[in-house]
Image (tube, rainbow, N blue to C red; front, side):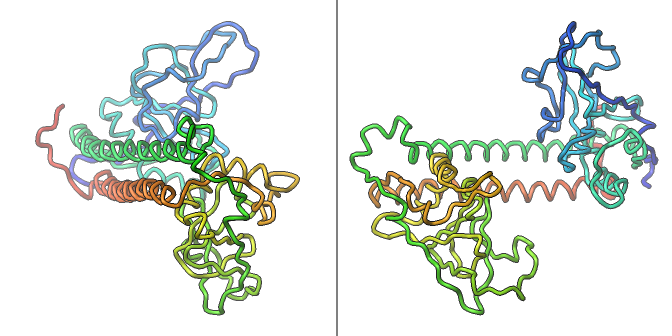
Length: 402
C-alpha cells in the first residue's frame, strides 16, 4: 500500500438505501422515479426531464429522495449484465426518488471524493468483486451486503481528485467518439431511407427510371456442396460472413457436412430463421455454411452485390422479409428461397446502384474505424483505471485544485 493510502470497505465511507416499490392505482402525491431504464450507459445522470412520474398515497420521506453526488446502482434486472451498474446523480432541482430495482449509496465521509468513488465502482476492481461475490459468475441481485464488503485502497483526497481528473479526460474522448459514431449511424439511416424507402419524398419522380423486380428474377439460389477442405463460415448480424472460429462456435469437425452449402465471394448468405431481423451478409470468403442459411447469387445484369446487402438491411425490406416469413410464431418463422423469390423491390439502374453503394459503404467503413477507436480507448482506459486505482502508478499533484 502506498504512503497515505489506507484499506477501507465501502460501507465505511457510504451508507446504502434500497429504492421504493410502488403500487398501480395509488392516488395522492406525484413524484419522479429513476428506474433501471434511465441508466443506459450514462456515468452521470443529470437530466430528469424524461424520468417517469408515479403517484403515491403517502408523501415520500426526505431520505427516499435523491441528492446531488448520490451513487445509484442497479439492484435487480432480468439482464444480469446490468446488475451492479452505477450512475452518479447530479443536477437535482426537484423531488426525485428511485425504484425498488435500485440501491442508493450516499457518501458519508469527508475523506472521499464522490467523482473518484464513481470511477471506482465502474472499474474492473468492482466488477471483479461482484464476480467473486457471485461465486465466479454474474450475480442475480445486488445486495447492501455485497456493496458493504467491497474493499479497496483509498488514497488521500488530493490524489483521489487528481485520479478522477485524469480519467475524465479519457471519458471526454470516448464521449466525443461516441457522438461521432451516433452521427455516422444517423447519416447511414437517413441515406438508406432515401435510397430504399418508396414512401420517402426523394422517390417522387424517380420510379420511372427504376424497374420493379421479384427477388427471384435478380437472385439465384446456390445449393452446391463445398469441398472437404472448405472452411466453416457463419453469418452474423453485425459482422456479416465470417470464419466460424471467430465467433467461438464449438468444433463441428465430426459433423456430416454433406448438406452444408457452398458460399463464395460475391454471394449473399442469410439466416433462414432470422432474415426477418436482417441477418444477412455479403461474403468475401469461400467456405461452407450450415443448412440453416440460404445462399443467393446476384444476377449481375440486374443488381450489384454491394447494393443488394444494403437493400437487404433496409427498413422496408426487413418489413417484407418478416411479412413473407412462414411459421406459427416468430420462433419458427422461416424465409426459404421459394418465399424470398416472390418479394418485390424497385431497383435503380446499375450505375446508380454503384453510386449509392459507394456512399453507404463509406459510412460503414467510417463507422468501423470509429468503433475500433472506441474499443482501443476503452481498453486503454480499463488498464489505466487498474493502475491508478490500485496505486500501481502514483500520480503527481501538480496543479491539483483542492
